[in-house]
Image 1 (cartoon, rainbow, N blue to C red):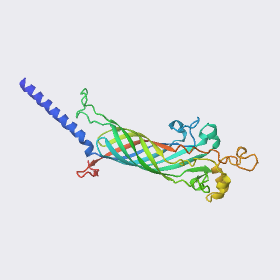
Image 2: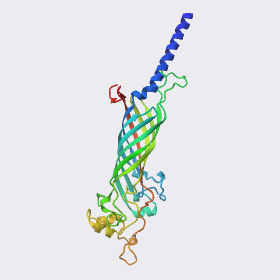
Image 3: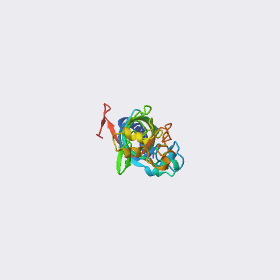
Image 4: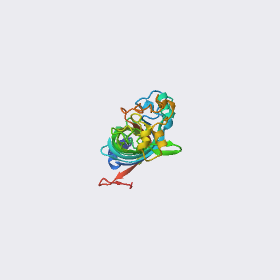
Length: 317
């Protein structure tokens, strides 16, 4: 009997120290596997002047027009500075779209403008791990309180990025770049200079990640991008005379330049009482007080790389 008691005691002590050493290893696991390769795909959304839902325009995600959703992809590289803190560099490509015909709101529908644009974005962000993973008991024993593995991890992130865009509108079956045309008088009004197609953005968001095993994990993240431009959709301020736009543009025929400045040019409600003048001159075309906004919702795959003794990543396991 005493022999059995000693044997059981030895086994319990062995299991205890095995679990303790495993727990200690798990706490340091992030130092050995502190690099992630990331690739993902998901929908992209735009919130600006063009399109929107069927109500009065709102400066929030409540005005998102889901039928104009497009898709994008990203590739990234993550490095853990601390167990809960990481930095990530990401390149993202996506398409965004806006179309006034998609909304039943009268004034936007009557404006009848539309666009699409690619987004080429590179950002660097800092991430904080809100909920930390835990490897759990080495045997994953049920009923052992506090030792169950935690495989669902949550992150919050914020950073800074640079992105390029090129808004185009489809007319007569062709996509035409809008920025060179100066649809709001940028080519002839001294107070309106052509906007730059490379801008800064502030990416923020949340990520939920599932750990499949030591090397592979899967995540979903929602990441709005706050920008400092109101011209991603080529619309911001007021109408100018389309005749002047056509006269100062050398990239497309005059009749196309006029229609890109105002698709309803020449229609009765655009003609002044004298029958000649353009009645919409200086009428509201956009809202310069609210900057444009876009967002990605990415489903990604992560692969962890082991760190060498010198701290460099390696594919060796």
